[in-house]
Length: 539
Image (tube, rainbow, N blue to C red):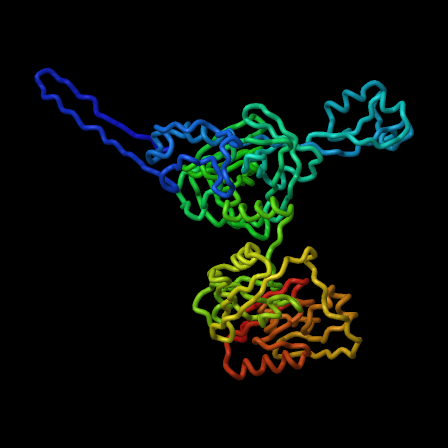
């Protein structure tokens, strides 16, 4: 934290000399993430407020909150005092089966230590003897018994006066019993209202809770890199603990899930902070602390929080129905490289390149095809490939949206109606076709052997029935196919933006592109079930 820095040069006194003094230089750094603090920072604007039902998290002092801008020299004490009563400790326990051992059990016969030393080996060599039977266990026959054991701890925060608590999915995953403890020591049993593994969010409901202090959501989109943030949680089970820092980056994709869009912070976040809130300087929740990057398991100044703009919609759905419905359009997409941008006639690498469209999907009904580049969805610009699934998933299901795509060198506008994301990611394919003679051909220009697909080849190369195209069965060393990275087992689906189903189709498309003087063309491949475009160089 920046502080007021005041330095002064002490006057140097010498006999008969003139006193020389240098004035102090004061640097005051004003940092305000979102403007002045509201005086009602702990009361939700989404629900009606009944005075007798609400207990403020802290008494708001008229001389502290909402009447002046925040600066680092003020410290964080007022902010921590105001919001911490609504930050909770989450402890979980699960029922696990434990094996009891008889004298004839394999576990007992495996033990080769001297009789009477069971406790010694269990205590000092737990890895080698994790289930060492005790004497009282040996008296009974082999049987299984269920025991409740602690699973872990985490953090959370209250979002309503009647006891709804937000935390991470991984904090309560596999939990059979959940106990939530408030900062004043009050304990509540909690039930899981709903959980969403894909965004790592969960909503709990405290039993018989009322008149609790609670927090409000802020707008994380207004926060900028460099803004101050406050994290409160329960690191290492020590109890409520606060740490401060700045937003280091936004929109981080760390490959934790399909909708990654993390806020990166340098505030100290450790194990046990998961599920705790990340505040702006108005006391609003702009993120949920979810994970850290750490080689040692401790904080190294790289923490990640789920943005409030994503979390709020998920939590609202969990509260209403206990589950999350996401929009789906039924496409497989890939990134646009510099080479592919040139092939498709684009002057930049923005957008999401469609490599496959599921039969009967919303995209299929809207007329989208492989090779289209999605530039916008519902008026939102798609700058990167990962922007599209996140934008579609956060859009209400069943509505019709405008899409802008790049097709054959021109901008095309379409309308598409989203559907619910299928629970089974593997969609039913087309009906199996009758076996037919296989056409094989050696393409000298391509430098590869090509074959039509049949059931035998699909089984040998593990190719799905829904995949259509031409199979590569051999690649000539030093040939054009090898130089472009084609492999045995690849299926060419489109060549130079033309669908291909026979080796002759590939040969004709290749010769036509070469005759036209093209230096590279777009080739759509399916490799081990994954579809993607390749900038295929002809020279």
